[in-house]
Image 1 (cartoon, rainbow, N blue to C red):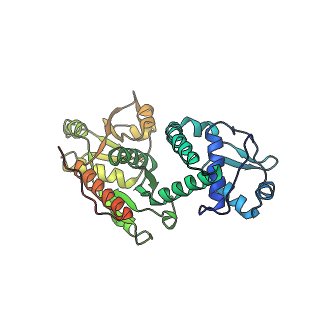
Image 2: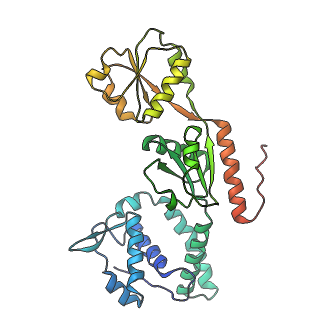
Image 3: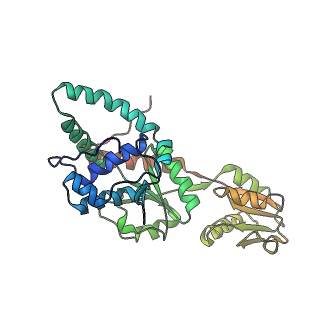
Length: 319
């Protein structure tokens, strides 16, 4: 490595976090590239005069972030450099901001090591104060789609989670968002006392409802969804619209599609639309977030942020 890793024994920041921060920076700035070999935990520990377990802890954290992997002969190797740099535009902006602050701190007489310790300490403190928000759904496509939508509306990172595919005890979230359909199930999950669970409304898109209303009552309609629960929910909606000849299908084989006048599929799985194109008429069942739910979730996020800062929160008044 061109530049050496430095750690401060006097910093409030754990040493393993200091190592993670510096190696991550080297990867994102191009000093370390995919395939570059990192020093062994023993060598790193000896050079930094730290416990070998501390070095192993740092490497384990980098591995969880997808930045390194262990290879039998090569040891620990960088693997996520290109992807990290492709998504590091925000980090470049942050670097420009920090560059000004670092120069000012050096001008005050602080050493480079003291500036580094202060920056890492403040960053870790700020990270600990960030809200951790998750969205839970029953399949990966819907979870990712609505997490992205919520992130955009709430202006906060929302992590997508899939029911049955994560350990609730490991999700130290401040807020878990889900749909009313899964609210009872999510509330039964073990979680810390600080975690709030809030349900939001996911409603059919108006265009979806218009298309469904135009389907003749005697047509045979198939429903293909990733889960039986979702398919049943859509079927019940069609039944309420007076469309009785509805059948849930579990695949796109010719046998499954035989006799179907049209098939309703989720808009979150575009590859399914491609597979069915030209074989049967398709209606994409699109969903949107309810505006009132977005406002409610935004208010909850504001309250939680204020609680962490120790200040009462008040929504901004519209001009």
